[in-house]
Length: 114
Length: 111
Image (tube, rainbow over all chains, first blue to last red; front, side):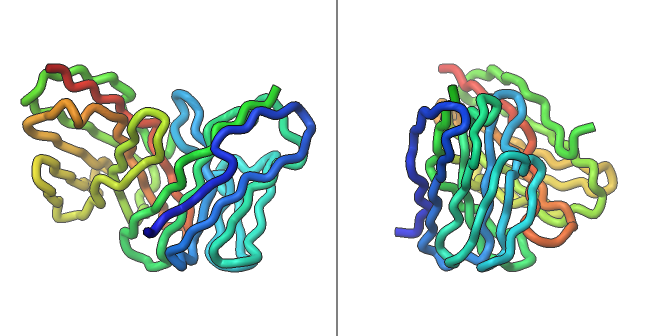
């Protein structure tokens, strides 16, 4: 089954404790992306990657890191989480073509930073 | 001004009604346009891509007006199951995988 998986699905942590949210896709997609979703603001792009070792900032990259060492995986790293990073996070992937290609989303990770 | 703007609603309509959503975008060079649907606390899923010629899928019709920089979604004969948040999505012509989402329009269809 074609899918994007994220782990963990729920996480409560404390300020400053480094964490990683994993994302993996089995569709051989070149493009992968991380979003955060907050009430009234919609989904905002954090980082995206166009291929292995190729990443770029989205609209809200501050406080986050990413890496793309393998095509299927795109982890999101919070080196020192803060309460304003409490949010619902989605990973997505897409075929790299120039046309109107669908993004496939993971189920989401709900993060609470206290 | 936000790059992609939608009326947040909520829209409350009875079953069988026709409802229309609009979305405006600021980057005139934007290339690709979509409507996604999101159920409460779930991941967004593609509803329709939006083409210049307009496109229809069953009860759903999407239109793109490049001159006025807006896209629309029309839902005919609304069903209870159409209750969701509808997200307008734009890929600006900046290369890469940059994607801009509208904040979403909430729809409630009542029996």
